[in-house]
Length: 227
Length: 227
DNA sequence: ACCCAATATTAGGCTAACCTAAATATTAAT
DNA sequence: ATTAATATTTAGGTTAGCCTAATATTGGGT
Ligand SMILES: [Mn+2]
Ligand SMILES: [Mn+2]
Ligand SMILES: [Mn+2]
Ligand SMILES: [Mn+2]
Image: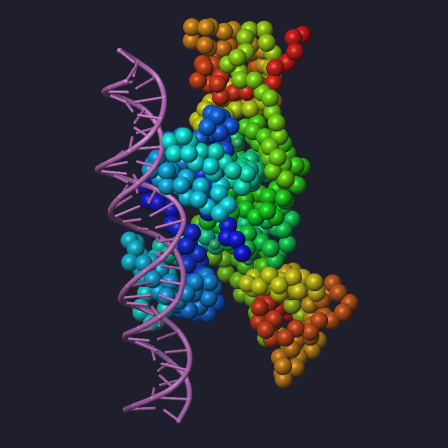
């Protein structure tokens, strides 16, 4: 009887998956930063993950780490739990999109496959979480998504917001206060190459909004064809 | 910043609470049996709980253990989580009453007070869990309940099933198969003092049911006045 | 090509929660 | 009151996951 992987191991694998997607590689210090542990702890855990039977990561010292198929599978299981839970907390219990990440981070490790399945059914097998991140399918395939980063748009271009990075709850609250949320339609009306500020007009609001590059790099959109 | 009590400590306190209610005292070996650890482990944990600041239990060696007010409070918090979760899993996600205990045993440690509150609201501040156990109120008062054990009833007496001990999922499945579930109305039609079997007729069913004392001691009812 | 700052690893330790085996206390039966 | 059976505690040890401090590697700037 194979014993469940620990919460810690699951968090490491999930983090390695995310960093690999978003930065190309997962380094010791990035993992440490995300998980709020010391780099020394990460070195130790990585060594362990690499020497498990079967190995969950491939490790080349000082070169960072990548997931093996086994590690990838566990990561996707946890990410599916996490994103389904986020949506469930929002849709069924009325949480707001800035609160769900923290709660899902704890719940993701303890729900059964049975509960995962019932949540997915209740929500109608959803494809995106509240931040626009894709939810891996039941057989653990990550849906493709080809969104453009908002900081690449220029005046005249129209778009629909599809995804906002979910790492900072304060930013999420700030953005929803301005109507910058998934599915919002917008048109870019200004850009300054000095500070990379982008000014945009949301369909739903009167006022225009100016966002700096620190923010626009966290937002991803579907670009609309010219009218 | 006081750090959260561990899952383990929470399970010990919950178990001590339950044993104290149901048996009058919580002994080392009973705790060990419920938590599926060795008595030696329980001795160690109890010693620790008693020496915490503030103490969570009062411990007299070889005499068992009782909760302090602090320990009681934590136990009731976890029991409130557990029972709200059981009902939520049944009502909102379609779990059956024999599945909810196991799932709630894991979830009870990780839900936030915010989530507890939202679940309670969604369910309309319920008073009983799916097995008829009372749910502590938000300010951690355990509602009184005065039910009679089914094994004390005799032919001619009518009753409504109010509570079934939730310790054995197989028994719960067996009983719901026969219609023996909370809120079912029944009348006792037979009793044998040789084997303490009780025969009863449920309003909802044609057939009568015979239950042995091992079962009737797990079932609690509200006795109806004579007609 | 070399050096240094940034990154990463190793060495050594700690704590929580468990275990087994040995010792001891309690209780029930004579 | 003794003793045997049962219940409990103590002693000693393991494992996972973290920490700090010391050491080693890497890679960019000169
Ligand atoms: Mn997590
Ligand atoms: Mn998300
Ligand atoms: Mn539990
Ligand atoms: Mn219950």
